[in-house]
Image (cartoon, rainbow, N blue to C red; front, side, top):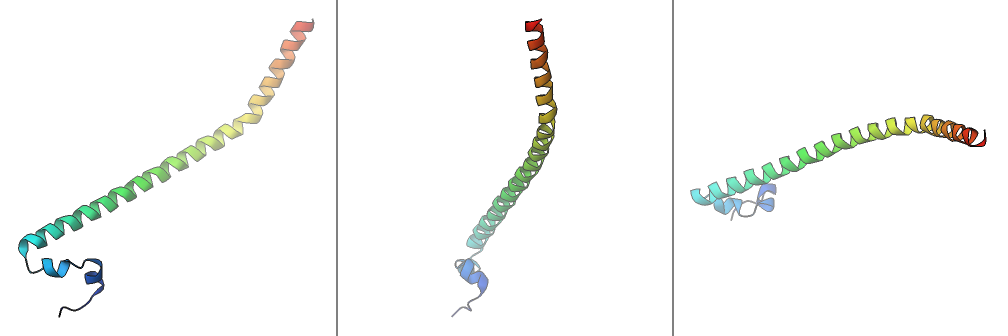
Length: 86
């Protein structure tokens, strides 16, 4: 009987594949493909985190402009009212 290891529990067909070069190559390819998929996923996660950091910074900048723009709007509205009534 083959020994039970953590790897054999995760990849039960690995022990069978070890005895056949063709299966061993197929398993290696599947493993490499899975690792590439995980790597691509984490690259995407990192890219999205960077995008979110940029968007948060843009939001902070826009939020900081709101009081100034509101003041400019009030001033323009006052000026418009003064022109109407003079």
